[in-house]
Amino acid sequence: MLKMENVTKTFGNFKALDDLTMNVPKGAVYGLVGPNGAGKSTAIRLLTGVYRPDCGHITMEGIGVYENPALKSRIGYIPDDIFYFPSASMEEMRRYYRGLYPNFDDDLFDRLYEVFQLPKKGQIRRFSKGMQKQAAFHLTICTRPDVLILDEPVDGLDPVMRRQVWSLLLSEVAQRETTVLISSHNLRELEDICDHVGIMDHGKMLLERSLADMQGSTVKLQLVGDAPEGLEILHESQSGRLKTCVVRGSAEAVTEKVQAAQPVYFDVLPLSLEEIFIYELGGVNYEVKNIVL
Image (cartoon, rainbow, N blue to C red):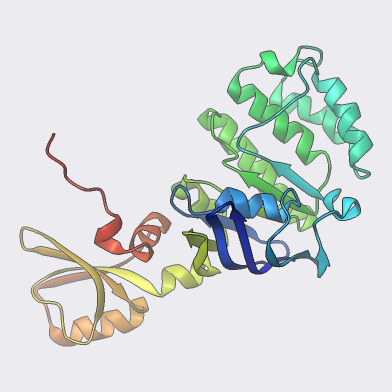
């Protein structure tokens, strides 16, 4: 559905993206994660046609995105830093969006007032940060996009509204096969809703696959005793007699090898997305450092 093939983007002497390739399947909820400065926002601005790549190709359904208004009208985009016209109200922004997006759903817009409960006539710039983010969802979902691209989408929302927003997004995916790409540092929430994940660092794609495959290829092993030979251990720590190892391999394969060694105790657990993120970025080299102040 959405593809970036060997895309490079530089700003002066700084290379923001370096031969980046990304594939977002149709109808997927794709989580794009990486440390600060990894190039996620640059990638998003290229996918939405805001930037032109220095080289490489960016396509939606095989068609180039840059300078393609017809294609862009099928893409909804909520940036991290939201802009509204200085004196615009929700109803004025409705008319503006209606002129840009041919699939704008006025009936849905009216019904969403019950969800977000925003003032119809007040100036959006006077709303709180959380209310402005709600306004962005209210407007963007009503464009009925085929692709929805979100940069830190629920930052500033309270827990109840966060759940409401995720529910709306997943409903769009289920009913309309909307393709959703989400860039966020909240890996716990992404783990609950994403089915595909891409991990970026220094403008490159380190790892890209379905979340199920990602979690099935690396596990956490806890045991009392020595770890058996033949395991590909990415990281190891110990608390008292209990060792915790991050091991490359499926749960079944790791369990079979550990059982053969007959340790006093062992358990094989799945890794969270946050743990996968840390160890794919270099294990102990990306952990929180203990610094004496």
